[in-house]
Length: 257
Image 1 (cartoon, one colour):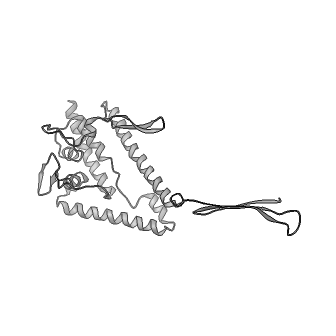
Image 2 (image 1 turned 90 degrees about the vertical axis):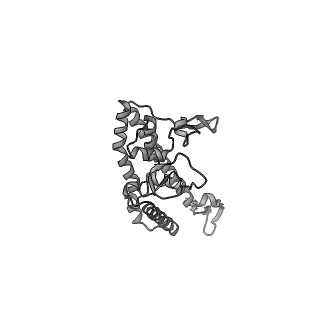
Image 3 (image 1 turned 45 degrees about the horizontal axis):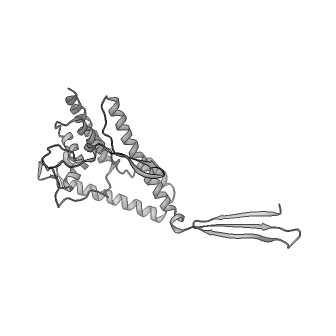
């Protein structure tokens, strides 16, 4: 072959060259040499990996919701529908509104109905009487987060390869945030039955006080705190779900009677 093509794929560039050997010794020359520089925002593999991770998390999240809907319908009940977004003429738009009972978190003034997701989970754990849609909303709320587990199988596989420093630092930071949540949860209440994320959310929002554990507030005030950006251990998330199952069945039986 008298013509040789060569490519160099780098992290932030793509190089290409065409070599022509010519007709005799010493007659070879480059017919083409070029290098394409990739913008930094597209060259970073970390950003691409982060996007893939977010997509997997979102897909798993939607799959859990779809599973609950399927189980609910199989039991002869109608699940609450959330808002739906889709592409219309190439643009993302709101296709249909969600059920107000699912969208709303706090009742209008004078309305005694409980819409607050964390409070519905607490009420369900306590065996309080709830409507069918409230039970569904409580369970839907409980599956929103899957929790973090540093010992899952794919983590073990990753540990066998050398992690880059930024990946190792991110993993360490996640574990530290999870440990901080566990410490805060245990400091919140001395009672094991209150150490669930629903009580933690209600506590941070000012809707429940460990000092008066039987009381639940209907509305938040100026002192309400955010519960976002906390890493929950998967063991705690799964424990709450298990505890919700039996009272859910009992509550649904009472509703259907």
